[in-house]
Length: 533
Image (cartoon, rainbow, N blue to C red):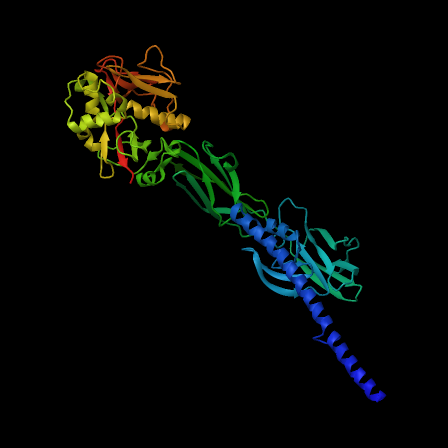
C-alpha cells in the first residue's frame, strides 16, 4: 500500500512540475506575457514619438535629421534608418509618414550600429574628413567586455566605447574599410564591416520650378529642385516688400513637396517678389530665382452676401468686390450692411464705387430737377432724419439736387441683374453709420454725428460734438482703401446741407463740407443695394 501511495505522489509531483515548467507551463506563460507586455510598451513609446513627428511635419515641416533626433529620444536607429530599437525590441518604420510598419522581433546578442557622417559618404567642401558614429550594445543580458576596430586592417588604438556604448571614428579622409568587433560577457560576438567612400560635394543644387500664386490675400509657395550628390535639404524664401506680411513669414524654409501658405493683411492690391534658393545636404546653395505674385483684398459679390452681417461688417468695409461689372464699370467696395432696414429694406448690402475722373458733374444742373415718385421715396429712405422732420418737402434747390441723385432711373448703367437698385451717392446718414462701425465698431458711435440743423438740411459733427460751423468738419479719416474719403477728390453726398438752400453735403479732401457753389465740378460715387436673402 505504501508503494502505491509513493507512486501516486511521484506521478502528481511530475504533473505539477510539468504544469509549472513545461512548454505551456505557468512559468513559461508568465515569461511570455512579460515579454509581450514589454514589447507593447516599447511599441507605444515609439508610436507616441512618431505621431508627434507626424504633427510637426504637417504643421511646420520635418527634416530627416529632425526625425532622427525625435527617435533618439526613445530608442536607436539602425544605420539604414529603416529599423529602430526601443527597449530591446526592433521595429521597422516608414520614415516618409512616419509610422511603424512592422514588429521585427527582439534584439538578441550584440548589435553594432554604424552611421557614416554626411549623406552616404558625401561631405561638405569645408569638412576635413568624415566620421563613423554609432553604438555597440548587447541585448543578451550581459555586458560588452571587449571591442576593437581596424582601418584597412590596421588596429585603431584609440578606439573605445562610452558607458552607453557610443563610439566615434573620426578624420577619415580617404576611401577606407573599417571593421568593428565586439564580445559580451555571455560569450556572444559580433562583427561589422563598413565600406567608406569619401566624396566631396561642391556642386550646388538647382531650383527647377517654382509655383507661387495668390488666392485673394493668401500667398502659396512650393518648389522643386535637383541635387544629384547629397540631395535637397530644403528651400529658402524671402518676400519683399514686407507690407502686410506677418513678421515670422517674411523669410523661411520649406521642404520639397511642401506648400507654404502666408495670409497677408495688406489693405490694397500689392505685388510681392519672392526669392527662392535651394540648399543641399552639404549646405551648398543654388542660384536665386525670383517670382512675383499680386494679392488683392477682394471678394466676390456672392461671398460678400454670404459672409457679411451686422456683427462682422467692420472687417469687410473697404474690401473690393472684384466681380461686380455693370455697364458703367468702376471699382466697387463694401460700404454698409443694413441689418434692420434703417434705409428701407432689411438685410441690404451696399457697395460703393471709388471716385473717378470720368464721373464728374456740375450738381447745379439739377437745381430744378423734378423727381419721380420712386426718386422721392428713395431720397426719404436714404435720409430718415430729414424724412421725419418738418422740412421733408422738396422745394429747395439742394433738395431737388439730392432727389436727382436718389432717382434710381438715372443710374441704371450702374445696376446689373445682381443689384436691386443703384443711386448716385450714399447719404450722410449712411456715411455716419458706416464710419462709426469701422472706427468704433458701434453703429450708434459718436466718431461722426449728424442731425437736421435747420430747414436747409443736415448738420455734421465729430467726436460727439458740432463746431460753430455745423456744415463742415475736418476729422474724417480715409478708411480702408479710401472708402470714406479720397483725399484727392470732392465727392457729392446724397443729402442736403444746412449751410444754405443751395448747398449739398460734400465729402471734401479734408473732411465733410458742403458744395457752396453748385456750379463747381464734383465727383460721383454711386452705390448699389443688394438684398441678402
